[in-house]
Image (cartoon, rainbow, N blue to C red; front, side, top):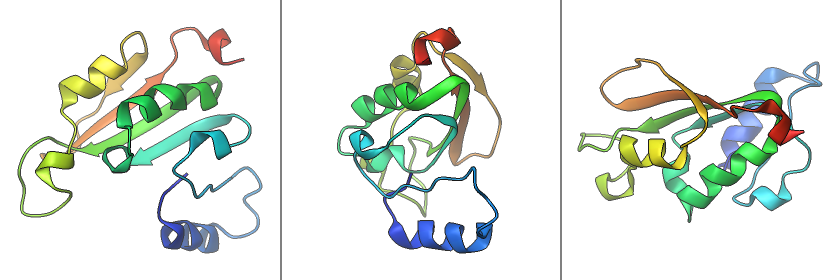
Amino acid sequence: MDICKKRLDLIRKKSGKKKKNLDLVWSYNLKEVKGKADFILLITVLHEMEDPERFFKCIFGKLKPHGKIILIEWQKKKTEFGSKFSDRIAKSQILKWAKGKKKKEFPLNDNFYFFEFSNPNPKQNA
């Protein structure tokens, strides 16, 4: 799922027609997304949402049991590139929204947070 149609077209082109288990969705609205996913990749997109908290909390409902969400998002600090500081989301806020979820944090670099999230009880997605 992405809000940039050009980026999805590029991914679709590079992945080829052989990837039957890859579903690319262009949307801002989770209600338009049908079915459940094994894996959801959110790369610098959460801060672009009109209501990032609501979107983040709802995305867990789109996971299959044992599914995972990978979140890479701009750190809440001023840099020479990337999204505006005012649009960035503090790490503490993301962790507050993810309360009760399993999480792993991975080092990436000084510009991004990198998390893996899943539901603590896979049956809640069934």
